[in-house]
Amino acid sequence: VVASKAARFGVPEVKRSLVPAAGGLFRLPRKLPSAIAMEMLLTGDPISAERMHHFGFVNSLVEPGKALEGALELASRIEVNAPLAVREARNVAIRIELADDATAWKESNDSMRRLAKTPDFFEGPKAFAEKRPPRWTGKAKL
Image (cartoon, rainbow, N blue to C red; front, side, top):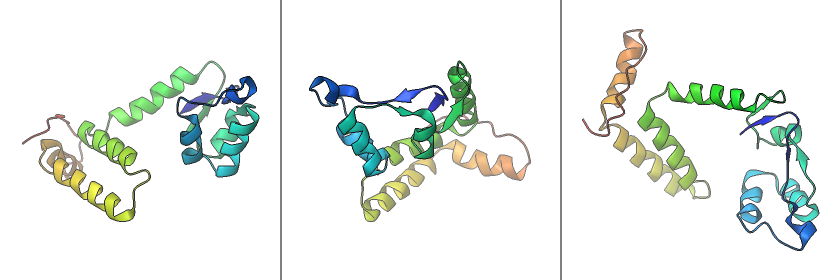
């Protein structure tokens, strides 16, 4: 999440006799310390971007009006990486967020096995050894 230093985050539903039924009830306690999530859920009061950054909910704070620029900069840091590896890392991280260690190890190893069948798996180390930028193909099979 890239946020303006002026941004505020909140789930105001309780102020209107509602609950955050779009996922906030279970997603906030997964992403924030329990006490902070409960504060947000029970008071409905917004929390500053600086505070959310402190708790790891926001990756990057930028000046007001610069959120899109900050998000594009983050995206550019991601897009230089192997696309299949980025996709695998993201998908596995999402799937195993609440998994036990045995499941997490299995998912991680399965992911590596899938990547080992791709041209990019070999291109990364080869480019490193040849001291050149990698040329990713994004192809799923050899």
